[in-house]
Image (cartoon, rainbow over all chains, first blue to last red; front, side, top):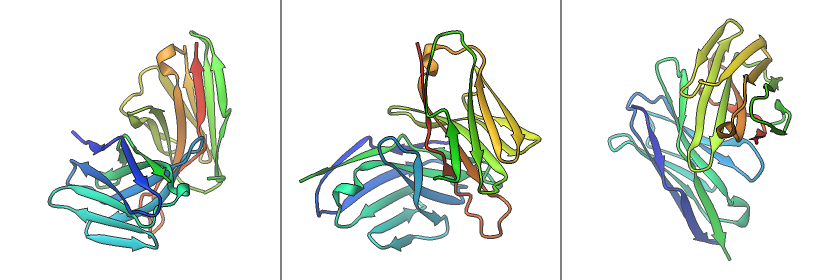
Length: 112
Length: 116
């Protein structure tokens, strides 16, 4: 069945790069997304990548997609305290993108 | 996202009570969704609606019902609340009609429901 997996926790020193990884199972994904959830708030879209792309860069964020291995990663350069949040990987599935499947989320904590 | 609002933001209720959570959007999107979030489980889809007359069950619809009163309003009901329905509930919207649609979903701030 459809599944999106992520590790639950990541701890990074302030100023270092954070890399959050995700694997998915559905090869018919159209879009893959990264959402950010700050404490007490809903999910906000950080970035997305179309399934025929390998990489997308947006300021401090770099998304890498390995479609063969069904692996998606989010790299945050120069991690700052404001990046502390839960990061969700998600994929849209079905020809009409009738569903989005979310991973369980990775909690990113920043060490001084 | 201020364009998607949920009421109430917090609710404590007792087992067996009927509860309604409401969602409104000003984004003009055609699709609306209800999810619940539990620690370590991510988001699970309860119901989704592609149009006012098109409502579909998600992966965990048992114990829940929905109503799409208008394109902008989608409410979730718990007919007889039970403690394992204690969770954070999110409403989301998406636009399937835009030529540049990326199927992105936009989320409300969430409703924290506690069933005692």
